[in-house]
Length: 464
Image (cartoon, rainbow, N blue to C red):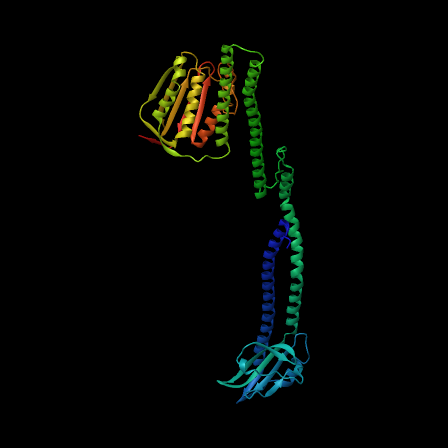
């Protein structure tokens, strides 16, 4: 079975609701008209009763009209448009007098509706509304006055009304369906734009965006949300392309150097010392390549999904001291003065492995870019219920215009373009990603040729 389009479903749902509403309205209209028509007939019958009760005289156990001949000449001598039929009967239900318009017919006395009750019945196959009013001699009923009024006009009005409503009902619903379908089509026009735009978007064409509707309704929010999603996807794809390009370049460079060195080495025989020099150079480049691959794998591991953290209580004082001790050879060779300031024991519930990578990269950078006879200061203190770790070096620093870019993958500040300083430009990218995972705020301030300060703000600290 073929599914209805979204536009037709909206129109159909609207019509179902409207159909119920119109049915209720039509039923109320019909009921009001019927009540009005019958009220008018009832009032006329009641008025006739009151008038004719004044035109009879009671003598003993019988009664008669005061002016019978005049009454026959005056009252209901012809069949009017809405005739009133009058009939008098005695206590034995025998007809005493009746209006001339009854001719040979008589009104049938209904025993079940004997006492002043209006009810519907038949007169020569015609619908009438009738009332039977008793005539009393003190407390004794000596007869009845029976008054009836034709319901032909009322029935005709109600039948005509019902026919009009029955015919109008489907016609109105059909018209409303097409009107609703038209406006539904206009209302969901942005969805067509979404479909069209989605069909032309590919990995090579991410610049197209959905036109925003003029009305700031739910479809406006939907279109805006999809456009924002496309912006994020475009940014992610561009970053992926840039990352792939940079990674290929960084991997190709040491491989080219190694290949070139080996090609030179095999062109002619060399002495032992020259072979050893070139092989050591290749080993250094292989180590650099291996380090780059490790960093790429580490970055890829945490780039696209939130890593499951293995939290434990980490003793920060010992972590910093162990990391500094790991670089004792570099510290001694560059004669760097290291100072630490821990005014108490600090503990933090975090992932020890990931946090160790952060501290290791920051300490490594601080030492790598420090000058001979430089200084390295590590401070841990409490600031506004947070632990604040501060790493300060007196190295070459970072220019102000480069501070916003240092977390970008493969980006290296121009101040680091020294042949003796090797790097991949991935360390701070890894630090930034891991800080995000560990709910750590990182801030870097620096001045060229004056040094750099890195501040880590650690939340949810458990101070002891």
